[in-house]
Amino acid sequence: MKIVHILTRLLRAGSEENTLLTAARHVAAGHEVILMHGRDVLPEFARALAPGAELVAVPNLVRNLSPVQDPAAFLEIRRLLREIQPDVVHTHQSKAGIIGRFAAASARVPLVVHGVHILPFLGVGPAQKAVYLGLERATVSPWRMEVHRGRVTIVNDAYNANPDSVESALRTVVAMASRPVAVLGLMAELGPVSVAEHQRIGRLARDLGFRLVVVVGEDDGIAVGAGDVARRVATPDDALDALSGELRSGDVVLVKASRTVGLETVALRLIEGVAA
Image (cartoon, rainbow, N blue to C red):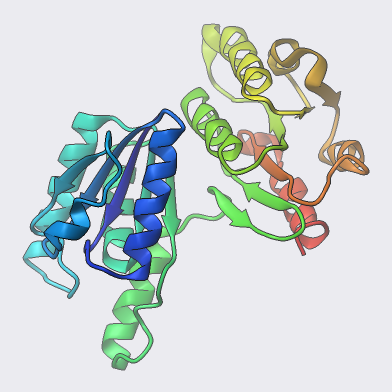
């Protein structure tokens, strides 16, 4: 996969160190990694980036709110993402999280993940707090790669699905666990390529090492592609029954399909149960 990490600053601090370690692991796993950073950077810390990863500067990306530089940073990041065409954008820190997520959505990146490192609205005035909270709420859509950690981690991505976003989600979840599980359903409105794309997604899940793929409702080929790791069920309630007794501590479960399938009910009930 092609993965872009976006940081507001690249200084010597916990969030930067965490991001550098994450990028190094992605490189070691064979992914193409690009790290974008804002104006503030320590050259010696930038040199700590794993060999094989690429560093890209966005000078207009600054920590403080700026009515001039913030729009310029958005346009620059969007342009870069359209050129790079990543499979995943992972944003870090508050300013990069907001501008990066808006830019990634505008560039139609299949999968966008945000890592929360600090809360910018603590210790500030009420006006600045209101701006931060409003922008944060504007970037968040429910049921899009929501990660709920517990005995079993649930990745609730049930808002919608297309072949690119499902592929990215499968690859992301595989990197999170040695025993990945998927609950999948129809990818709607694919037209004449529907059967081929559903079968391809099923084969991908099997080849990536998903030990169980529960396919809910109407299926254009996921179960056929997944072969012996697939289990077809009729309803979301049946999917929960199929998972009963199958999940172990440390498993990661991806829940994803088009909205018409209604898999958010599966994700929410799993979150209330095994992820509690």
